[in-house]
Image 1 (cartoon, helix red, strand yellow):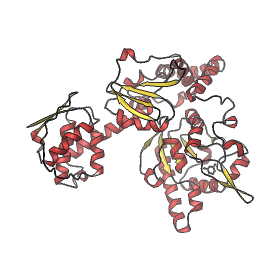
Image 2: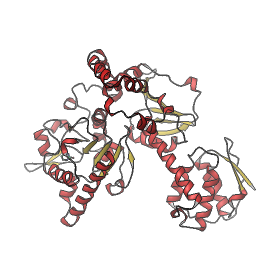
Image 3: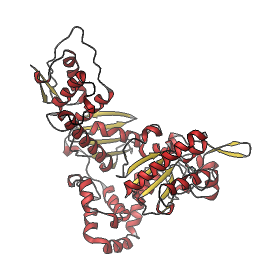
Image 4: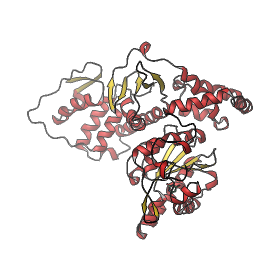
Length: 458
Ligand code: URA
C-alpha cells in the first residue's frame, strides 16, 4: 500500500507517474490532501514510458482543481484505466468518465466566474507606482487555471489575485504563486470603490437586470467582493422609475466622479477627448479621423472588426466599405438586422501603407490593439452585450487576449471578462481575399457563426 499527500496537480503527477509505470493498481494507493508532500513511491530502475493523451492530461489538470478529496483517486483511476483502455474517455456512460466530465464542467464554470467577477482595486505604493489587487473566493481551486487570462489581459500592470488557496502575483511580466498572506494584512477597499459603485449605477441598465439569472450566474457568495453588488440590490429594489430619477441626479457631481473613475481604471495619462484625441499609439498620425462604434446601445450582440478600412476612414463609420458589404450580406442571410446590433472595431484609427496612390491596409500590431482596448472595454461596459462576435484575429486578440487560429477559436466557448460570451469567426475581408473555391466555405462559416450568435443572444 502506498500513501501520498498532495495538494496540486504537479505533485500528483510526480507521484502518479512512477506508480503508473510500475502498474500499481488504484486500490493500492491512498491519496490524501495535505500540505506535507511526502510521497511513498516505488523506485524503479527502468520505468516504463507512459503514453497519456494530451486530452487526458488536460482533463486531469482540470480535475485537480475540483475541491473534493476524492479527486486524486479518480484521476489516478482514469489514468490507470486509460493506459489499458485507450478509448476510455469516449465512453460517456462509464461512471468514472461521467463523473470526471461533470467535475470538469464545474471547474470550467468556476474559471468563467473568476474571469467575470474578479474586481481589481487600485493602490499606489510608496514609490507612487500603481498596483492592482483582487480578492476572490472560488468554489473550486481554479486560481492556476484562471490566471493566464489576466496575464494576457493586463500584461503591463502589476497585480495580485489572492484566494483562500493561494495568491497569484504578476510583476514585470512574470507570474508567481505564493501562499496567501493573512487576510488582515491584505489591502482593504479603497476610495475607488465608491467611484466604481457610482460608475456602475450610471452604466447599469436596470431593465436588463434579471434577478434569477443573475443569481444563477453569480451566486450570492461572490457578491460581497463586488463593489457594485450594493448598487445591484438597490437598483433591483428601487425599480426602473427611481433609477431614471437617480440617473437624472447623477448628471452632476456623481457623473463627473464616474468619469474620473473610468480614467483612473484605464491608467491612461489623459483621454478626456475620447478616441479622437487618443495618442496612446501612433496610428492616429496618418488617419483622417477616429472611427467610433455605432448601432443600438442596448444591443445584445456586439460585432468587433479589426480597424477601419480606407473608406471607413474617410466616411467616419465602421464597415461601410467592401468588407462591410460582405458583412451586411452575411447578416441578412443569418437573419440579423444590422440596425439592432452594435458594430465597432478593435482599433479605432486606420493603419495603412502607401502603394502608389492607394492606401493599403496594414494589420495593427499587438501593442496597438492593446492600446485601443480601453475604448473597446468602455463600449462593452456601456452596451453590455450578451454576445460579442470577434471578426478575425485582431478582434479575437482584443476581445479575449487569444492568438489561436480562427479555425480553432470557432470551436471554443470563450467567456469575456464582462460576462458576455465571445463567438469567434472569420473577418469579411478574409472572404474578399480568399480564392473563389475557398471563399464560399468561409462565407458559409461566417453565416453559421452569426446565426449561432443570434441563437445564443436569444
Ligand atoms: N474592416 C474592419 O475590420 N472594420 C471596418 O470597419 C472595415 C473593414
